[in-house]
Amino acid sequence: MLLRFSMKWLCLLVLQLASTVAMAAFTARPIQILIPERGNVAGYEITEQTNKYQLIAPPMMEQANVEESITKLTLKPINSEFLMSLQFTTNYLATTGEKKLETAQTRIMARYPQAEILESGITYTGNGAAFFYDILWGEDHKLHSKVVVQELEGRICELIFSAGRNEYAAHLGSFGNFLSSFRILRK
Image 1: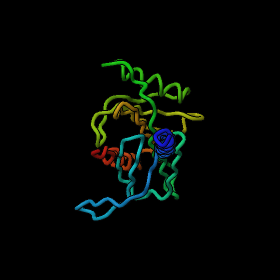
Image 2: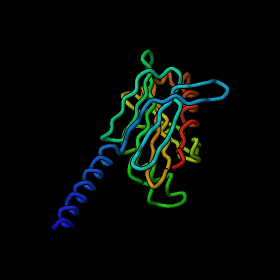
Image 3: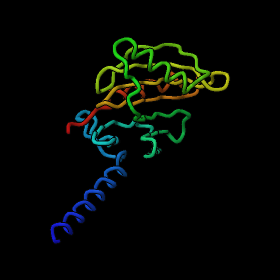
């Protein structure tokens, strides 16, 4: 009888722990990261399922929006018209080799149906190689975005920089820094 009672409590405890882990499947918390040449800089530690990532926020970023339900972090400066985001999704690059670039492009075009792809190819983040798509989209193609698609730990991370066509070039370097600072932390 006591064994059955203990097993019920153990099962309830396991279910409670599992639901707690499921609720905390995606978090992004502000942190300070020590850069020897610059001192402490603002950044984020991101937990997605069982993986942890870190990135340095560009200096102008003052607003962050975490959307746990869609595993997305969006950073936006208060006084500017651009944003940077990262979002984790299931791995839609189930193909291999050169088909991956084509598969990712199909996914991007489905999301931005009126987009014009200016350029696509390979780029790098702090985690290694990734695909990128430089696109114009929106009404009269007034928005310019760079979409980076990277496979990480069996998932896809999409890192996106969007701005008006006139502001894009001025802030693209900040997105490059954002990409190079994004890295997986050791488990």
